[in-house]
Amino acid sequence: MIDLEGTLLGGQCFGWRKTERGFQSVLGGHLVTIRDERDIHALGLDQYFDMDGPYEEAREHLASLCAPMRKAVELESGIHILRQDPWEATISFLLSQNNNIKRIRSMYRALSDQYGSEAEEGWHAFPTQEQLRQATEGELRALHFGYRAPYVVAMAQNFRPIESAFSTGQARKVLTGQLGVGPKVADCILLFGYHRMDTFPMDTWMKKVMKQYFPGKDSSYFAPYQALAQQYLFQAAQSGRLPC
Image (cartoon, rainbow, N blue to C red; front, side, top):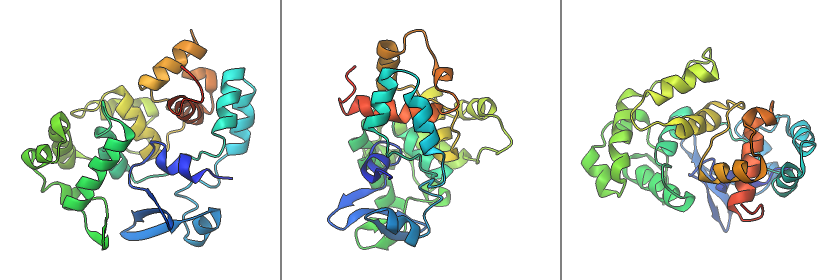
């Protein structure tokens, strides 16, 4: 069974909110509400939530590797990797640098409210590339984007979707050639915007996890489920349930 809170609020995306009605966000220009898995099917969001992904096989394989990985799988077993819009994921993870989830969500909402189209009262879609092209560095700094402001302005002008024929290595090289995109941000964009499941974003939490529990190993240890391993370990660590 999918863990909606872990999947939607754990750092993969930043537009979902937990309200008294359920989990809500603007998708495709419309406000959607998800309470349970039945709503996912009813709203035709199976692809977005990757409902056909090989999660059972991945959990079994990863849990068999070692005790720390087994614990992370048991703690976070309901997480799915969302299939997000590449443009939205790209800008979202430009904002993630040296930042926490709460503040990234606030910045995401500021961008949407300032430049996106209104879906319903109090809810705006994430701005399109054309809409965000109207933003200036000064305006974004006024929204407290700091040094990230010129990164967003440059990406709004230069964004092109990664070609599906590119290998993950080729795609990473293209992304890191963009202003403000380092290896961690590139891997987050590739994972959450392009569903490249062989990526393994290395932020501060993951560096601690790898040092403490997997010394001398790299992401290939978790193949072919590197991305899921990263999500299980990241969320277990940052929640404090896998101490590091």
